[in-house]
Image (cartoon, rainbow, N blue to C red; front, top):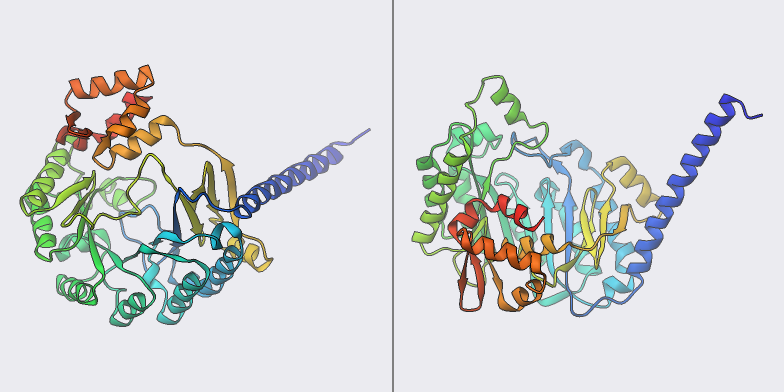
Length: 412
């Protein structure tokens, strides 16, 4: 007869065996995908994640580790790229898009950054018209870092400014002065790389006038792109705790935030910026960020680094979040992916992804409107003023932009 202790060990062994089999199945599935030739009709992108920051910004839910943990990250990333670079899926066709996000990618010191960039240059072929974006804070985009990025093929910088005045920046955990912002912006533009500036609205105590001023200051620099993001209290954020303790005013209500967003849109439009996405505005037709744009065809996205997500075809990929496990897995010669599961995009996800880009063309409409339920949803959106028709399809109205989060309910 099996004792209670025996049952416990048996259950534990069974669980460990099941976990091991699951991990093996995940890796086997991924290796099978990477061993195949890529679909030549699909756009291909690489996303590199750096899960480190010098300190935590008060509004950021993506923060993982401080600078101290970043030591040796370059070696792990190089090893991961070397392993991926040998696979047929990677080496048989160029990539159109590269995006370094985080965290703070430019937190890597110059030596580490050079090694990481070289690794990407050596393991991935770049398409002739590639886009290579690197996110950065102001204080970490030094002269040497700008030169290094430019020399290794980076052609677009996304600068997380959020606000220009020091009072607001300190509230957000951003210590750089407006003077330093001006210096760094000028140096990026002098380098010839495209520049995108991130701004935030819906902040504690923020007024519409204040946000209009921030948009105006950003436009004074004539950046190629401006992104406007609403503060969202997701997870255990320092700024949420400060509000709860009465150290900061409450967030503006939804209607006030909508007016703030509307005012920002108007300022950008009045200065010649075209809204190409619900959060983004560009100065020229070729300025929109290709990484952000979504189409009916979708794209494959290879995740590199710890805590990076991506997909190949209908398979979703996600790398190890725990940095210790990520490192140990690579040291054992294994690609550090947690999941490789088949999950095709739903019709709702595809439609909303396209509409984030402000419009849906006739070809896509004809495809989706074959469904009676989808057809009725689009008719209702037109009737209630969320969408309007134009010569080659439909596009979002201002109401559709301001209340975009509600659109998902039309396609459930």
